[in-house]
Image (tube, rainbow, N blue to C red; front, side):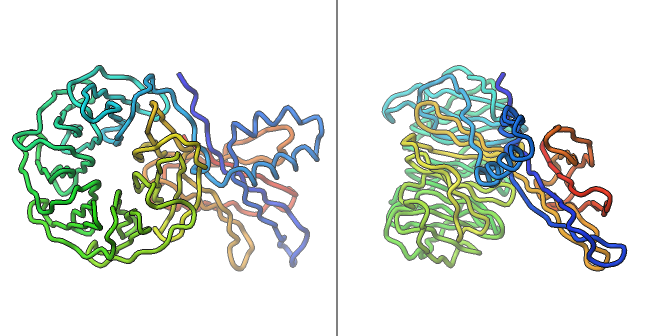
Length: 416
């Protein structure tokens, strides 16, 4: 088993002397740190105080949060992993052959994103997978496969029309697959065929009551039910390769830049400064963040779809798809590449107006458990549990109080 690294947010609270009678002033320093890296740095503890300062300085400048930490996970294959989804408590990835004309799709499953199990072979080369209505559905070149448990798969021919299908999603009670045309199904066995455009479609997402599909020559199609589709003006004549919905809007990538829309109908295009938008193969939303992966291995993120930040530099290893689940993102691609992000959450401190007391703010996934600990001395590495909680809202506040007799305190959080 591969031990999952724990991303840990560390905060320093330092007393700065009397602010007014009965109160003290505190300096708040937020540091984001991979705790496993911090532990390894303890080999330098012989340098005492200066060593701790060096460790904190290094950590603060090395890692911003869990999205800056991407770990390679063994897949057991050197094949091309073309798609991934999260459903029913597990990640499911699909392998396509390196040639679309060949067969040999294979399935991979994981409950934690780090330990993967290969589930046999089949007769189709799969490019995408989705979960809904109690089952997984994979689709690709001329074939689709269905599984109720991710372990036993039944393969079907895409008939009578065939074709290559690049993406599939489940929303509003139905599966929608796009590629050479559009296929829709409620249960994944009986499919209806539509071809509202002659252009190839590469991605589909659902939000604001609409399915939105994107493809060649700036094509954007929208539908309220997956059956009746209308063309939408994108403002682009170039290929649009990927789309996702989150934080109240759609985000799509194409050769002309980043396309954003609140309603899926009116679109605006802006430049992407941190990556080549034509190389973005997939974008996915999870836990307040859009994550996009590109053909040279780079990974970027955004909260609103407008301002993007580099999270991983290119390494010439193609990434094809990304999914969010169980507190982290997982990206897959060429040569069996599987990358998992650190846990996605943040810890911060804020001072209450009036009495100067402190509040701890933990922002993370609703329904996920977190552990907060406190220490007064990093050199001895002694931590006491401060709180264990399950987020009932996106941001949970806890009273940190004031302790004038303690000159410094450090808080850290981890999940699980």
